[in-house]
Image 1 (cartoon, rainbow, N blue to C red):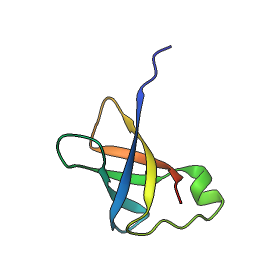
Image 2 (cartoon, rainbow, N blue to C red):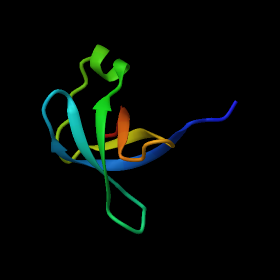
Image 3 (spheres, rainbow, N blue to C red):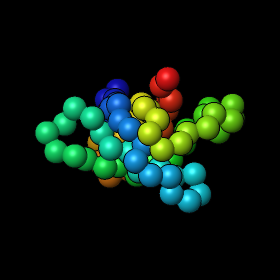
Image 4 (cartoon, rainbow, N blue to C red):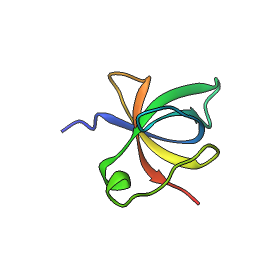
Length: 74
């Protein structure tokens, strides 16, 4: 089975409405921004994500502009 997700670390740049965030991915040659939603576990456990937080995201290989926040780092 082929893994259809890429995993990156980034910083929350902006908190958009409806639980969506703009994430700037670190470590790439260009400043890439991805629009991400919260994963189910983060919503379930009521973890707050604000601007400036370091996060780990999953991005689909089919659409590199959208992703999902899977972990909030300290």
